[in-house]
Image (tube, rainbow, N blue to C red; front, top):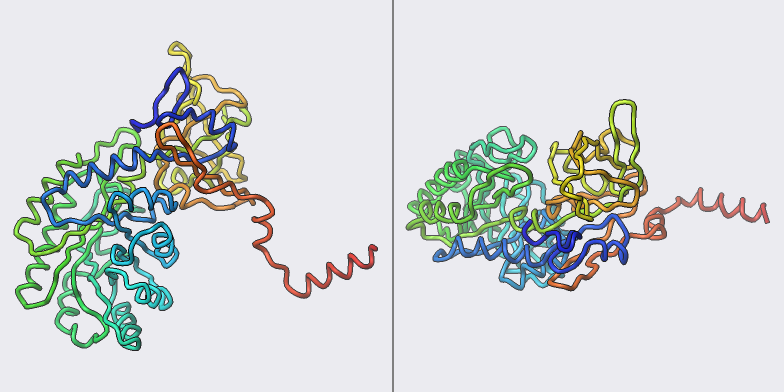
Length: 431
């Protein structure tokens, strides 16, 4: 979070005071640092220097077009898991040949759209998907460039809800089934097998699960090459973690050294799909205190942000640091407080008994490390408006997604004919 710091007792994103943004935009809002995004991306490229490597930013982490375009200008492609993400990447200026389409449940419409766009690669996750894609491509007189996503059955040692590389997970194809499919690839005339891919999970804090998984799938890649399969691309996936609290994720340079070791002599273009690593610590959620409520046993700080704005604490028991936007006096007493939102759910809670300095109604709080899996998971539960997204670069900021308004929220509903007609009749009768 080096691009977020106190200056003159006010918390800043780069050169912009957060209270200034709050005055102009209102709260809650997400704020992203362009400099932090750029630094994380360039750190990874330096770690991979000397390799024939391409980076495909994992759009599911944060799909705002300003984020995608910031990375695109640095040379990144996009890893997408839906037609919507593909269209966002294209709209942000990512070339079709720099897009990889992953995901376990691609629909016929999505596969057809990917073929129409002419993207670089579709990562296939099952025999059934392979058969469907071959049929769609053959009907169009095309050959789809594919990689088989391999499930290497390696425990990523991460949260159970974000591990994807063990045999009990729904993702990917086992090594044995991949061998079976490779042996009959001629029976799928609409596809061209060009690579292997894997992704064993997110928020990995140890390099060894990566190494184990990569070794298993690189061995399979070499085996297929020895059989004459025309493979040319190896997709390492993503998963590098960040620090939320006291984690010690792999140093990116150590990760790069491991890649150099494991990929030595591999005749392949190398692909990497970072998401959280690039944007996680490049974003914060700024909220205002509505009330401080003293219960019989606990003190509750009620914010204007809620679980619909940040789902991670409820979904993953996730920790996010919280800082008052106005710097507290160093001698201020720290008091345990429950930090909660206004939604009518007991799970609408950001933190239990978090030690914080005194807070009062109207104070601003920055919830840290919310650049990934925050705005993209947001909803309008309780008919709450989607919060705006802001990007800062130096001493400038811009709203990169405006706050939703109630007219737009309600206009998305449609009354059926019988109810609309009934409302018209009542209106005439009242007149």
